[in-house]
Amino acid sequence: MVPLSLVRPLPAPPPGNSRTRGLLGLIGDQVPVRRHVVHAGEAVYRAGEPFAHLYVLHSGFLKIVSTSPDGRFHVVGLHFRGDWLGFDGIECGHHGCDAVALDTGEVWALHYGTLVQACMCDVRLLVGLHAEMSRALGRGRESLLSLCTLPAAARVAEFLCDWAQSLVGQGQRGDQFVLRMSRAEIGNYLGMSLESVSRSMSALVRARVIRFTGTGRRNVLIPDLDLLCAFIRDDAAQGS
Amino acid sequence: MVPLSLVRPLPAPPPGNSRTRGLLGLIGDQVPVRRHVVHAGEAVYRAGEPFAHLYVLHSGFLKIVSTSPDGRFHVVGLHFRGDWLGFDGIECGHHGCDAVALDTGEVWALHYGTLVQACMCDVRLLVGLHAEMSRALGRGRESLLSLCTLPAAARVAEFLCDWAQSLVGQGQRGDQFVLRMSRAEIGNYLGMSLESVSRSMSALVRARVIRFTGTGRRNVLIPDLDLLCAFIRDDAAQGS
DNA sequence: CGCCATATTGAACACAATCAACGCGTGTGG
DNA sequence: CCACACGCGTTGATTGTGTTCAATATGGCG
Image: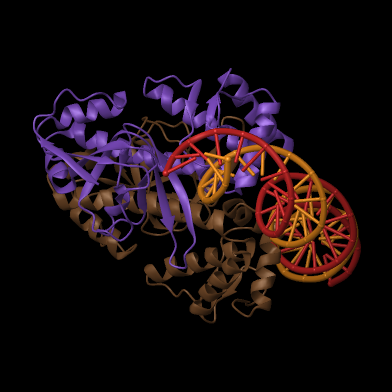
């Protein structure tokens, strides 16, 4: 992780999303922000490292990887621009997961102790921070729900849906984007083999709810997001 | 949910666990606590209800049930004595899940706004609260990990392991306890059919890592917790 | 005692994993 | 410039774990 600068106040922060934009506005110059550039494959933090900072993803994408003592590992979360990271370290003083960049991006590090001090002076900041944690919790539960209740194709469909909606939430176009993960990574995240991901994608194309554009099979086009959502429902109902 | 009393200060609070005991100590009489008794099947809160309180489970067990718009539902969490509940409501002002008692128990309700005010005066309280949220986040990730990387029998074994360790954390005996959930509920929680739970349990008995005591098959005895953990590892390795 | 909910067990089936082959694009070296 | 290797993705064949359907216990409770 390459430190970029330690700036205070911040030079016109380009928005992540409205939530975080607001939160960072509240922070203002009370908490120094250290900016880092991360390249694909590099970690923002790793399991076991002492916890001291929370991070805001300013650009790029990252995955959260959880590893068990006996070596099993799994992508337990994905994060986009504007998302907060590192809450998992508060409990026991060290991080419990790896946060690994999937793409070149920029991360803003906020010293937790300092941030807490700032929270003591501004309720809105405190509640905003809680809301971010709350959001992280809720997202984890949604993952769990789809993992347990949806067949493979629907899980992939929902994955694409979520990705699209995240992009829209950032003000980017959600109907056409490039997946930043290999089939293997997607499969790990969704709890299935890479072959199943591939087959599911092909099925989605056959069902006309997505298309691949250009060369390579990572450029996804979603003609109609509602149609994709309908596919999820239908495929879920299949099983019952 | 039956209101029991609105007491301040609290009458010698029997401990949930050391963490929460400490946290509640910090709160002291700054935040009024409303105590409720919940019976099996009753909800502490339901999805969609406006969020105003956080809850501490003082006794009993409860499950968190997440439901999707299209009717799929799933047990996404279990909570024991001393656990905090309701964080999911902070983000959007209303709860995203149901919290349903599995057993008669007592829940302490703390008004979130008041709690936040108290946090503004005591950093330890604030950080302690964050630690509880952090813990909730971490537990969700562990669920995800075992759900995706473990075969059915190992998942059931880990479930029993977790349950035992939770009991030990509360100062209760972890080698012998009564499951408060039906096979169907366990199966829903672990992402498998009730038949698979039953078969897995039978397999665990055959492997001599658990036994059923007394009448009914909900009284579990774990002769050696390490042996049960070893079973998880072995069964996980099986697949690879 | 008999009913109902719950649990166990067996047999057939299905979905996804695994094993394997092939295609495609990219980058490298002869 | 072409040959080749390599990573990645797709697709087919086969296997296996877990689901589903069904029958049979078991226990709680009126």
